[in-house]
Length: 213
Image (tube, rainbow, N blue to C red; front, side, top):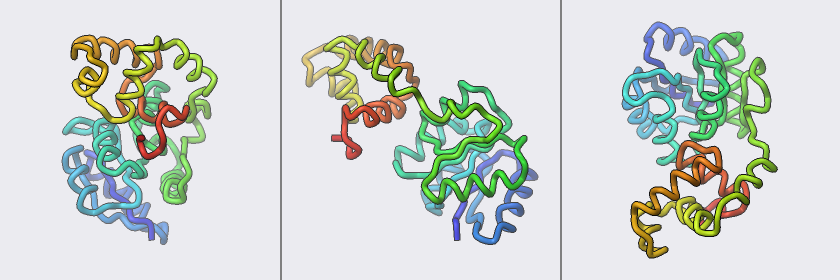
């Protein structure tokens, strides 16, 4: 049985999707939440196999919820289920750590398929969205990495290992302000907006191991 946590700020919407998922036979909604804080608390206690969340919610929103959940459980399977289909938002959701993205304009069976895909360890993208939103071009990323200066690359590596800007400053004997400036430039050059996306990029290119070493 696939255990699902459903997060959406509209009770009527949650009720409809709860019935849809429960009728699938192999899926059970173990908890539901109407805002990001409640969803995080429910995730921490229920430990679902898949978290299905909207992006527009009180309490920080869906993207912040994804980041908090992934910080607690790096292997968490999060499916974004939302009315928004803008390419930038889709990319940001995946950068935050989501493993699937589905719009509410999709057929009802799409939600069931997406939950099953994530539970099986596969990523999922709404069939009506461009497939290139699911992956970044590794050659483009390699070129961006090559554009970092030696000092920027060292700061990037330390940040990707989980060190704070203050710890980076101490290790490299730089001021905290200098490291903060480097961090801003690095994210801009690499085309990432979050620390999680920076870590994932470093892992993809072998800058750090999957264990963060």
